[in-house]
Image (tube, rainbow, N blue to C red; front, top):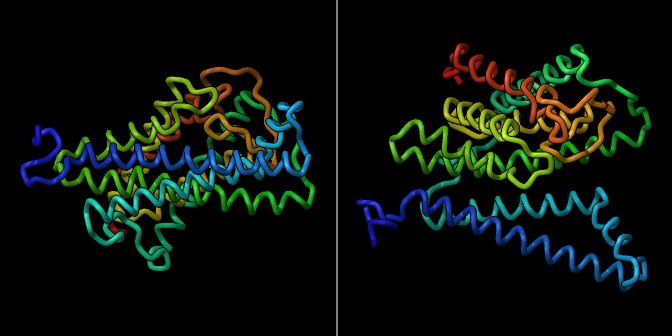
Length: 300
């Protein structure tokens, strides 16, 4: 039985380390979200902003942009906490070894990731627009949008940081001990896909695209040996997708400078999941992987 949990060095197997960390994240995230939701609901009742006879109004309050952002931040904080905790518990090594280096020394990687994420999503937007898959109904010019854009950028930065810390930094670093190269790419990318399994509008193609994105981000992490390029790519991919171009981000609406409407939900534009569920994104991600391989950026 011990060999089921321990390897030949009598250390906990990698699969169990990742499983324990992931389960701990889910439990802590649900608990923190529940505590906040109950506390905020109690506040609304105590101030008589909602009553027992108005459950629909309470639901509207809980779905407002500030509340959703707090819940996302709590989820991100839970992920960062459990990853750093179990890295110290299981490995007792420096956090630099999971790619969490000083960003001031790796601005080139961070900037490259930010630029590549922006270019990739802009290509998706232009292809969908030029092929008539989407129409631009209007765009926002209200000065108040500036504050929203800044807030969104910080939010997507936090999301990009915590997801890359787990899926690339933590999982890949642990799996590198297995000496099975395919596992380094496949396992974290599968987990990355499963982390989106409850997102609205999810399809098989959307899961495939998230898996491909995981492969692309994994390659960035492996060749640069730090997290900053994949974090940068993750940030601008989501930010320009949602806050600038106005697409759904993995099925969730954020609203952007542009307001886009699909001419019809289909396998090309991704339907209810947004462009991440469409074939255009499949092609862009595949080309991104080939681009990095052909560029041979091991010079970083």
